[in-house]
Image (cartoon, rainbow, N blue to C red; front, side, top):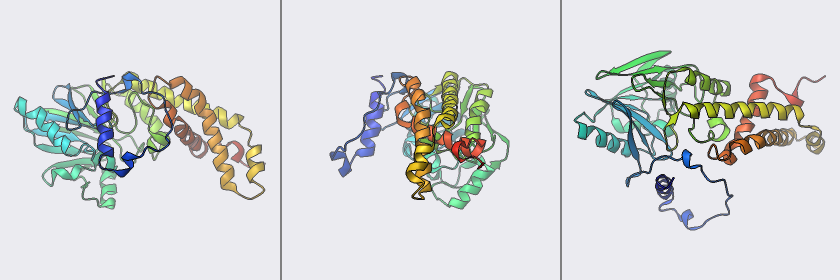
Length: 342
C-alpha cells in the first residue's frame, strides 16, 4: 500500500499545481479508505508507470488511465492514447524498447472507442501511423472533427486480426456497451484482454455505470468478457491490472444492484411523493424524489457488502443504483408506480 501512495499523491499534485483553488480547502465529505489491494504501483518522477504483462506486451498507467502496447521487431502497436498520459506514452515506449533493441516507432494505433479521455492524445503520432478502430468509431470521429483524435483509416465491423512483427491482436465488436464503438482487444499469446470502461479492477464502476450509453449492452459485456480465455485484464482505468477474480466480483456487484433495485421499486410506497408534489403539478419533482429514494434503498445493502472489498463503494453506488433503476424502467419495463394506468 505504501508503494502505491506516491502514485495517488503524484496525480493529485499534478491536477492541483498552479491553481488558486488548491490553497483553499472546501468543506468536503469523508469517504472510506481505499483498500490496499485496489491500489497500483508507484509512479516514477515523470508521473507514470510502465511494466511488462507478458512476451512483449506492456501496460502504462498514471494511476487514473491506462494504455497498452505491443513491442515487435517491426514497430510498436499502441492501444489507446489517454491525454493524461500524453507524452509519457512516448517516454514509456522508449524506456522499454531501447534497452532490448526493438524499434520505438509506433506503427499502429488501435482505438478502443472514440471518447476523448482515452484517445485524446492520438494526434501526437501524426499521419504516418496506421489508425485502427470500429466502423462506428470512424463515423463518430469524423463527426467530431477533433484534430487530437484523427479518424481511423482501417476499420472493421465484427472482427479484425492485427499482425505486426510476428505478434497479433484480435479485435472484436459485440455491439454497443459503454459506447457504440467500444471493442474487445485480445492478445492471445499473452493471455490478455483489454476492454475499456467496463471493468474497474478493485473499484466500483465510475458514476452511473461508467456513464455508459447502452446499459443492457454494458451489463452483457461482463459475460462476453468472461467468455474469452484470458488471465490479465487491461481495463483502461485506475492504477493496477485486473484478473478474472476482479471481473467476477464486479459482475456480482452489478447483479446485487439489479436485485436491490427490483426490490426497491416493488417495495417503495409512492404515495408520499405524489401527495407532496402532485397537487402543485410538479411531475419532475415526483420522479426525482421517488427515483432517488429507490436508488438509495437499493444501494444501501450493496454499499455495506462491498465496503472494504471494492474501493469507493460509498462514493458511486447510489449513482450506479440510480442508473440501474432507470434502465429497469426504460429497458426492462419494470415501471413501479409509473406503469399502465388501470
